[in-house]
Image 1: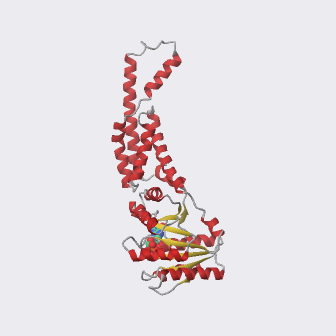
Image 2: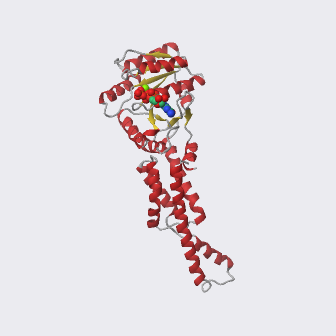
Image 3: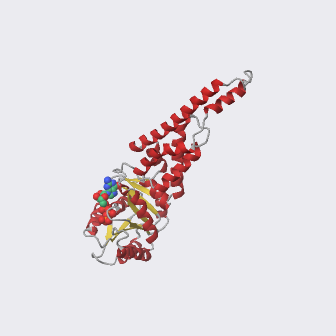
Length: 334
Ligand SMILES: Nc1nc2c(ncn2[C@@H]2O[C@H](COP(=O)(O)OP(=O)(O)OP(=O)(O)O)[C@@H](O)[C@H]2O)c(=O)[nH]1
Ligand SMILES: [Mg+2]
């Protein structure tokens, strides 16, 4: 688990444990003071029941609120969106406030509640089997979208390598006709991977490039068309319109949003924006190898409820990991 979060999590569990411990002691004391008056010594089973009840003291909502604040801070600082934190709080509250919870069970209950909550987020976001989709349609057209510098082009090349490994051929569409050197960057990847690039000049219509790449794939019997696009944000209204046009013309079978895990909570905002303006089917979270926080993945999933296809874990072609919910949950809260 990420250290900072781990500390806060342990701190929270400890506080609840201590609180429960104090209560248990108090209850035991009380029980010592006036116990046998009400309980007949022969009724061992009955007495045991009372003892159990006494030890399982309850945590008040007020105390819970105080104790949760540190964990709340840690979750927020680790890029877990506020809505998600509220959800976690409610789930935890439900499981431990005013419930007969034993001190030794607190840690496990807190951990399980967090895991369960996040597992549900990933489950609701769904899953996509990329290979089976690509195998079922020819050519299968994938459009890559996202903000500047998040890793779109690198990820596109990684996916090409992944598809090649699975005996699926690719062609690139150099539809980033906006950023200087973007076409050369794509060509460099294409040369290394032995892939053809369909390109026009800088400033050309991106939708026309996408269209030509698809035509090329159809003519050559190529399995997949991977369309690179220029990075853009909400401030680039023209580029957003251009992207909407690329989508209309290319009619991609899948639109993949690339988001950079280092942008933290902003990643969820970006996802919302692209969903509103363009729409997408799945996302890829890059640079997870350099992200020490790890909360972005939960926030984006929760916000847009779209499947995560892969995680970028480095700069090499092989550094693309299929997303596995359980692995992430264990890394975060294991
Ligand atoms: N450490 C690490 N670096 C990555 C990863 N993915 C991409 N990068 C790096 O991020 C930088 C930007 O990558 P690009 O692929 O050019 O990003 P882009 O979104 O296409 O950028 P624009 O076309 O300018 O919008 C490059 O230096 C990549 O090597 C990753 O998973 N981990
Ligand atoms: Mg690029």
